Image (cartoon, rainbow, N blue to C red; front, side, top):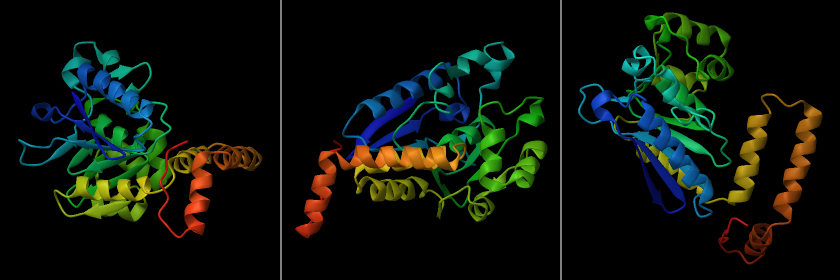
Length: 258
């Protein structure tokens, strides 16, 4: 299942199936979508952090991907939700940024979940791989198009065709990982990054996120048009008045998200 907790303006989502190396089954997928729906619906939650319970194993695993027993039983369709895609996460239509805290192996569908997050904070022992070819499967949850955008075609081909993972250090060098922490500190590092984001005006953060993501496929004219529209929406909000007033009064702004 996926546990949900709110800390200040941050929603903490925790993959909690350590006995199966946090492999995605139907319960994980459904509870993930439900957790994301809660996050999106709560006006006081501005950022999400996705982590995993890695206890009980000598080598920590963020997520081992799909529950292969369910695939073998012909139940692969249950590993996704209509709204969220694989794991209830990979295609969920979010407006709020989510940071993945990876303290161990993220492989196959687990790597695809990490790639679907907006940013990644990883410990030194983290690894990122697409191991599907080792089981005569195809990475079908976004890994084959998200990974090359982040690390380049040649490295993505090596990862996808060998099934061997990237180390955290290599992933950081290639731009896949935002920050590296000591082992066991990925969640702490992700919360630090989330708090830095949550200190800013949430409406501006959400609009900026959408524009950066859309830059992958929009042409320049569309980007300029959408940027102007986003600027107008933010400019007319209460938080813009608060931000400018706080600057003039030399105090910290009190954001309301409206």
